[in-house]
Length: 317
Ligand code: GH3
Ligand code: MG
Ligand code: MG
Ligand code: MG
Figure 1 (cartoon, rainbow, N blue to C red):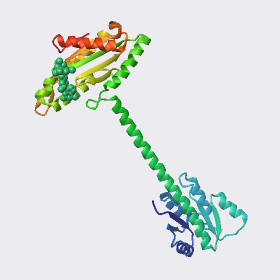
Figure 2 (figure 1 turned 90 degrees about the vertical axis):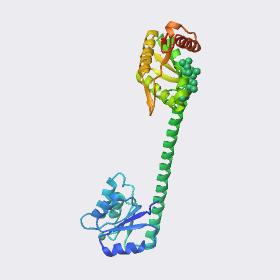
Figure 3 (figure 1 turned 180 degrees about the vertical axis):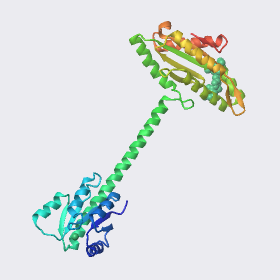
Figure 4 (figure 1 turned 120 degrees about the horizontal axis):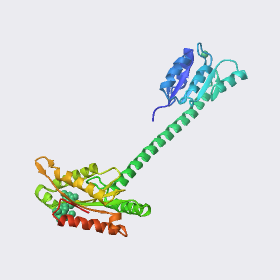
């Protein structure tokens, strides 16, 4: 933590010198200036633990200086002690407190008393610093926990390799969309996609290239579908797209679009190059009339099987 700083303001050089001497062994850095204006400009750049302020000074007196400091939101808290030789009349003391002083002491100053008052405000200052540091640490760990939670919830819903939603999230979303379409009679189509002869890709080009193709294929599916469609990696080289508000014909149309764009795509990485086709099964709530979510999966799985059986690279619904 920083060494606390104390500002001494007095228009007489010998007073400043005496103050410096008084605080010589004190655990604080002393700044001494001879006018209110100099004091104000220093206050802007420092976080003083305490200000010892003379009252009678040419130009701006101590009261005005104190009032100016009180006007600044982030400096108004600095404790100010007036150190003055002027009349001990009550009205001056009041004026001092009114302009925001915490104390009002008279010259000639009793060094011991001033040091013990200063020590009190230094302790306050240190406690405030410690508190600020604690708050900062707390905010940092809050931020960290928030980030970790975000990462965890992302991990819980997404597939590592492709960044698509994972199978667990599919189960959740299928139930949700199935319920919605039962309740409101809305359409819901589902596509199940499986890359053709993908084992051969791994066998001939290596597993890393296979991974690369899966990632690229995932990206293509996201690009081809609408923002309201939900794209999942169901497992291995199998994917599912849920299409809310879409009937079977619409689902088949989207399937065709993906199939065609996949057929045209050349996956190239370094010297390796390859094209892969995809077979797609389609089903929809109102055409297939499933009783429960499991039925719908069975139906779309069957459609996919027929697409494979019929020669691959096709959509069956
Ligand atoms: P089909 O046209 O009948 O679908 O043939 P296929 O070879 O694609 O079918 P099969 O289900 O027999 O093989 C799937 C292959 O997908 C086998 C497996 O090695 C590969 N695969 C599954 N997951 C991954 C993965 O995460 N990365 C890579 N590189 N390959 C994977
Ligand atoms: Mg003076
Ligand atoms: Mg396959
Ligand atoms: Mg497969």
